[in-house]
Amino acid sequence: MAIGLALIIILGLLSDYLFRKIRLPGIIGMLFAGILAGPYVLNLIDPTLLKVSSDFRMIALVVILLRAGFATKRETLNRVGKRALLVGFIPAVFEGTLIALIAPYFFHVSLIESAILGSAVAAVSPAVVVPSMIKFIKDDRGTKKGIPTLLLASSSLDNVFVIVIFSALIGMYEGESTNILLKLLEIPVSISLGIAAGIVTGFTLYKVFERYRPRATKKGMIVIGTAILLTWLEKTLKPFVPISALSGVIAIGFIILERSEPIAHTISQKLDKIWVFAEILLFVLVGTQVNIHVAWNAGLAGAAVIFLGLSARSAGTYISLIKTDLNLREKLFCMAAYIPKATVQAAIGAVPLSLGVKSGEIILAVAVLSILFTAPIGAIAMGITGKKFLEKG
Image (tube, rainbow, N blue to C red; front, side, top):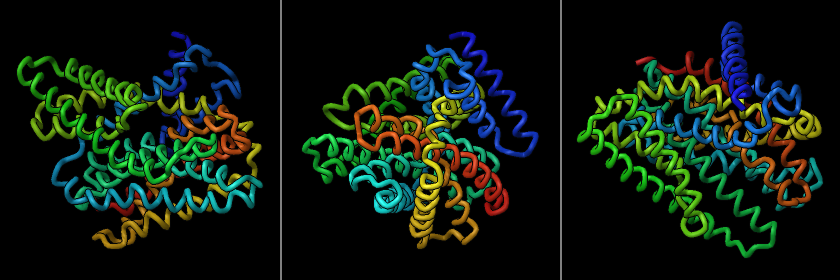
């Protein structure tokens, strides 16, 4: 396992360097390095490491979302709050609905199976979006109108919404008496409870840091450890009450920043350093989950479904931003930022197949293909449009 970890670090750093040299986002290089080193191509990574890759990916995602929280100020969040709700739901509804309607014509599957496919593909990837938005905040691009903060908040809402819909549809397929309206009610409940848990945790940590004044490195480790415990709490309470750990993790950073900017900045600096390692883990391990042989089977039909879905998502994003102060170029940037898919598709793409859904192989193939197509395209589009379209403060 130690050798596998060393290989991931070396391959991740090397691919990041090479892709930056050719002026492409380093995360694309890490993603492809994971695909090549993974079990479906060269099989260089220790299988033991792959078994715990989901835990490593979750830890890396926690680091991202903490950084997002520490970069989110109240006045900016107040300005984009209502808008973030719309952008968090409408694009996913547009994309998932269109895929559910057109998939039966491409793959000859039932409507419920095509709906499961739509929900599996419809989520945007915070793993790709959030680091880019944090970079734009630090570069002071688009911050005057709160555009990076808007996309930080809405991408996590998008994930919660899609995962709840996905689980409801899986339950319906398995014959459970799932009430879709009750499942939809879980979304605001889980987000609210997650934020509440994050607020309490953030305030408690602030008090601890004020009283005991640990070193900045220890503060960073305590924050990460506590945030990971929130994800454990979500899993533990899932049978009884829904809690969105992702929302809570962002709230931790937000509250500490609100209570004390000096403490928040010192922790944020440590998280930036930890992210160098976490980023490699996340994207290389996401790459190892990509089965290119399965993706190949999806063929042109899978590509058509993905790109038609993206067109619907882009339309939904544009509609969500109509009554805002964003100009056309800024709206185009938001549409580009909502393209990439990776983490959610890697996590849930194989679930229907493992549960015996008839078209499980097709769902997995299209989910994998969506990562291969949209993660690189989205990352490149964000970089280009961000520099050209976002006003520098």
